Image (cartoon, one colour):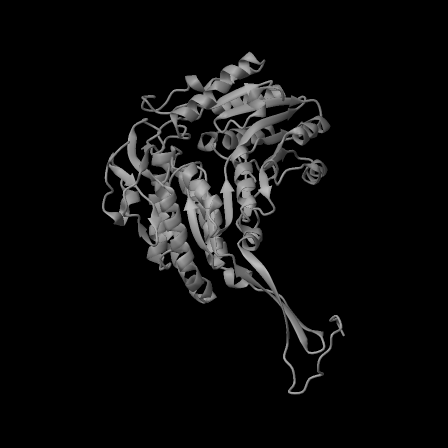
Length: 516
């Protein structure tokens, strides 16, 4: 384990040398203590270690929660105007630094810079939504519900809330959570992925520059020790999570058992149904874009194309033609369409589905292991776009969430057979249908048991003012992310009944109160 010390704290997360060291952000500044454990940060395109990141112990978890708890009363009581001014300043700072953030993300995740810039832009949309918090927090009022009695409801923050976020979107997914939570008057502890931690600390620095009070936003790095510390901590009121289904279920069960409000977004196996009347060129473009963007490391990636007879052969040929034109290379190379995967272990796991798919009867149409890489493969975590055809529901490539650049094509004899396939799948995150038949599209959106639906749109990620979330094993808890569901998740409702009496009153009355 490295004994390397932290650089000067002002921009610890912004260095791009092998000496980069990322530590926690607690109480408005980088953590000054010595970490008991550290992990390596890799540069996926070369495989080299580019720095280290501290792993939180229970003591650091307690320190971050304590800082958030201490900051909560003053932030809760800050006026909506004061909160909004900070949010607007934060929005402007993130926008001004979007290129820097994109390059930070690319250097640690591997995705191409343009894709990382898109991630920052989608996160900014949630910040912009949260800037409207004075309107979003308006309660209800009913005058004279009984004689000279008024009733009204108010939305109040919960207290300290936590977010546990994945490696695939180190800026966007946290920004689904903390802008709304903080705007509602809560204080926040973020536990990002230890694989690409720098963007979260840079965002913390921008919050501080925007004038957010110390302790309102904190960042803890690490592994299960940090996560379990937050799930069990008595001062954490709510937990938001995005990750795999087994961990989402664990987070939901553990946090709920400890009396916390939970939204835990799990895994996905997103199907794209292509009907015979669809524009096959449009469908092939969409399948390649949605299947291989960010090397398939998206929870909303299309991983299964359901080709309804008789279009399968023609559609696969068009997909193969487009895949051959993709350029795989380092994320900071403007010529690259797709970068490497995030770690060597993940690359090896994803690549294993090529062999298992063929062994179980699939046809390997495009083998990503043979894809040329700009500048050479070196020791990077490379796997090019891969297409498996004639995949069936019994195969591992179909049943598992691969989370990589492997597109499976399943043949279906009819619309009804395609719908049976989707209904039987345990995941219900996102789906899409490609058709020129409005009736079929409307029937699909009505019948499909999936939380987010695209009609001739392959990645139906909702805008910030709508909610993001799946059904079935893709969500544990009642609330989706951002939008008004995010506001409701990060607040609790208080109902008030008030009567202001005249100087004289009617005296004691022991009967049950009724509306008169």
